[in-house]
Every structure is written in C-alpha cells, then in structure tokens.
Length: 366
Image (cartoon, rainbow, N blue to C red; front, side, top):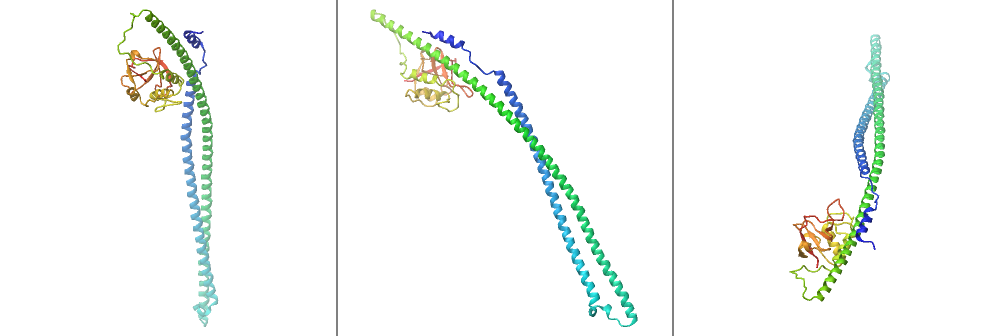
C-alpha cells in the first residue's frame, strides 16, 4: 500500500504542462498595442467621417445655388417674353389701328411729312426698345449659363473630394477590421493559455487535496488504533484514568462529509455573493458544503459564527469553522494538518492553504 508521504512525493514529481507566463505577458502586450492602434484608427476614421459630412454639406449648398440661379433665369425668360409680346402688340396697333393712332390723322402735305417723320421715329424707338429687351434677355441667359457651368465645376470638385474622403474612410475601416481580427485572435490565444494554466493549477490542487485527505485518513486510523490501545490498557488497569475539564462537544457527524464536499470545489472561482454550485464567496462555500450533508447554515460569516458552538482554536478539528477576530469579515473550513479550505477573494479560486495567524476564533457545527 502506498503511504500518504509516498503519494505526495509522486504527485509532486508529476510535470503539469503549463502555459508560459512570459508567453501570456507578451501576448497581452501585443493585444494592448493593437487596441491602442485600433483606438487611433477609430479617431482617424471619425475625423474623416466629419470631413466627408462637410463635403456633402458643401455639395448641397452648391446645388441650392444652382437651383436659385435656374429660378432667376426662368424669371428673366418670362420677363423677356412679356416684353416681346408688349412690343409686338404696340407695333401692330401703331401700324394697323389708324383710328386710334394720332400719327395717321393728318391730311396736308406738311402733316403727311410730319406724319412720316414721326412714324419713322416711333418705329426706331420701338425697334430700339425691343432690341434692348432682347439684349437684356440674352445677357441674362449668358450670365445664367456661366453661373451654371461654374457651379457645376464646383459641385463636381466637391463631389470628387467627398469620394476621396469616402475611399480614405473605407481604407481606415478595413485596417480597423483587420486589426480587430488580430486582436480577437490574440485575446483568444490569451484566454486559451490562461484557461490551460488555471486547469493545470486546479488539477494540481485537487491531486494535492486528495493526498492530504489520504494523509488525514491514515492519521485518523492511527489515532483510532492508539485510542483503542489506550482503552484496552485502561480496562486492564482500572486505576488508570484520563482527566478532562469541559471538553468541547464531539465533531458533528456531517463534518467529514461537508469537508469532502468543499474539497470537490477546489479551483472554482470566487464570486461576490455566490453560493455554488460553481462559484462561491467565503460563507457561500461553507453554507453549500454543509447543505450537502443536510445541515442548514446562513449565508453570512458573522451569522455562521453566532449559530455554531464556539470552541478554542487549539481544539479545532477537520470540518470546524475558523474566523478572524471579527467573524463578520471572513470564514474558512479547517481541513486538518494546519490547513484550511476557503473561497478567498475576487480573482482567486477555492483553494487549500496553510491557516494564517489571523484566524483566532473557531466554532463547531453540531
């Protein structure tokens, strides 16, 4: 039969594959650099997006100017058309409507001569006015055409600028996407390595817990044999007796089972307020462990101390509870051989460690 000491030696000699701390540190540094680059690209992308919005706004402004110019041309065209119609109507009345035209009423030679001169002057005046109106219309049309061409050039330039900015933005977004992919890969590798490391630690802790349990069982068997021998000696020598003074109550029948249950949770994470089955805080672990053997305890270390039997720390046995000077701060379960099992704090896991000197109170679950 392999002894507990031999089993511990064998377990200590097992090589557990573990992720390199330097490898994880290097990957984390690389991931941090990638995250920083992604953030920089994000700011750059946002700046380009704002420039793109500005260019689009400029295009909208130019399009509004083109629309305004087109309305002005339409108005000029309508005005010129009305002017031509009025001139045409006046000319028709001047040459055809003799009854209402004073130039057609003279009868003598002088009057006829005057009439001829006046008619010529009137015709010249009409032609001049009509030509001026047409020239003004043509000028307005030319100005509108030039304005439209200029605005079209500006609009095209603004759109070209917007297209360049959009292309730049797409390039930045593509670079971001590639970096995000690389970052996700690094984070995945980190998570895998950390999980491997934690699994190895948990396996090692479970093996060590099994070895300690075996050692305690062997010690208990030896103690039972010694007690039996002492009892036999006392039976042969009635005068022999062992004096005791207010001994603590016997260990409850569920203590061993509760301790065994707690040891199965070694490696599970500490989570504030958790009480199993896969995560625990300190009092949650104790409550869950004793619940497995049918004993109900409150989920608070101070209440657990108040609801159990107080014993001297020197009399502590496996399955008993140990506390600091203020029981409301923490609780652990005594595992034997000077060790405790506890759920310590955020970021750590349920583990078995030597009992520290800050544990000064003890209690026993009846």
